[in-house]
Amino acid sequence: MPASIRDATPDDVPAITAIYAAEVLGHVNSYEYEPPDTVEMARRMHALLDTGYPYLVAEDGGGIAGYAYASSYRARIGYRFTVENSVYVAADRQGRGIGAALLERLIAECGTRGYRQMVAVIGEPTNTASIRLHEKHGFHHVGTFHGIAWKHGRWLDTVQMQRGLGPGNHEPPHER
Image 1: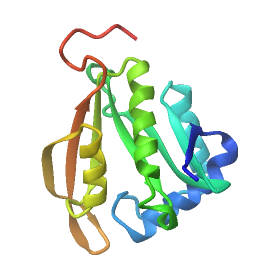
Image 2: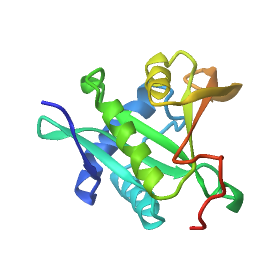
Image 3: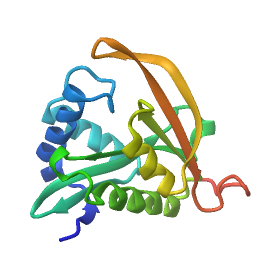
Image 4: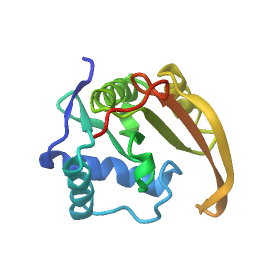
């Protein structure tokens, strides 16, 4: 059964927290060292929702299989039409198209909200699954920061990818 994508709710926070904790502890897709608890994850979710960003979950087989959200790329006002995406899929459900479904819906949601650019910040050039996912959804490689972070006893590179939303940067934005 394909994943069903919907808006996240506070009831989803425990599952989101568990998915993120596995990433924090075992991988380099997040540069945090300690996984946040459910209280902190709920605070983060509400901060994004309260400022109008989309926050989505994928249900697959009755449980939360993954989640995605958009957030501000940078805080300064000139960046207000650019978002950064985050997509996480539970380890036992990867490779089933869940990340693609989440990213596709996230792109659509951000486009309808008037954002014009989406940036992906991918931990490590060896994360080819994430790079391919973003390429399939129209992202192009714009650069790699070398040795920008330290985690798990090594320096990490970070890949930056970008795609336009709606008319992108080909016409002025509508003020938000």
